[in-house]
Image (cartoon, rainbow, N blue to C red):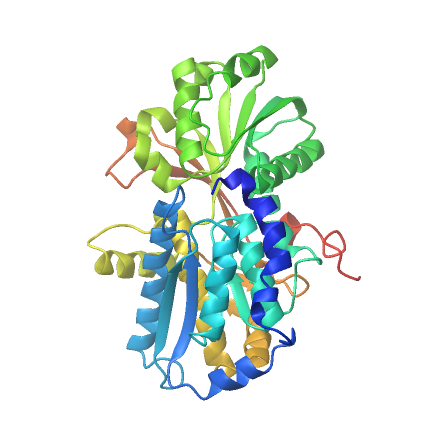
Length: 416
């Protein structure tokens, strides 16, 4: 299914997913919590898009999540109970995601769910989990999931969100009086990144000279670049994800855009940089939740990298892959603190949790359960600067964990 149809498909899911819960089923979670308590094995559902255009990022998330589970099991599990990770393919489809979540809850009797790699997909998953009263930790960027209309006490958001990501990137790249143009993928991710950049840009004093929307999975961007060139911006912000990022930047370089303006992206993707090589991405700046180079200054990053390399033939963990580790590990730490899998006790433990498992200190903000964490701003290296094949980026700055990068709780619709 095309990502451009995800939002519409999600609307259908909101009407139909709950119907699939069964005639007369209560929306208040109780029986599933009690049933899980008696199980010998702790089960964590992990639905991600293993097929489709985000598959590379999703497979990295699985590897990192499996590492977190292995490390906890090697230390005796949770109160002596083994942890199982139940990986499912949501196929980047909101209806499929709702179905997989229902199966994980009803058939597999999971104690919690972690996952999703799209704004619409995580909202569809969240719709099912909150109706069932099952704790859900989302590991994909979204602003919407933090807003009061989609939030529930069961909903936690481990990933960065577009507001905090674009705020950090804009702070490093925008200067007062600069002219900025935007090339934006026409679905939730692109729209939210555009909104975040414009919000940050307005505060800095930049001038928006144009916005161009492109369809998800566009094979040809050549028609957009003459229009962008005519706008004469200082910066072109390309707000898209997955293969779209690699394809659009490559075609921009072929057109000569990099000779005319700076290219900035909200999220600089490890896998897409690998896909097209250093020459294409050279000098491109963007944000990230994680980069393995943090190991030079952060002990937990070094420990995470070493464990990941040992488990994966020397490979380094990727940005979106790291979400699988931090999201699952935070949940497991909360289970330990809660003394088991009672849902309300796990929620309280996550709300109180102060954790540093891979990138420095993190915690969940109480009003919206957003993980407050550092945001990296990276620049893609020249080939001549690379010391190894994995040496892709240089860290320009690290914005420390701070609620100042987020929208306020009142802005999200929560009572003050």
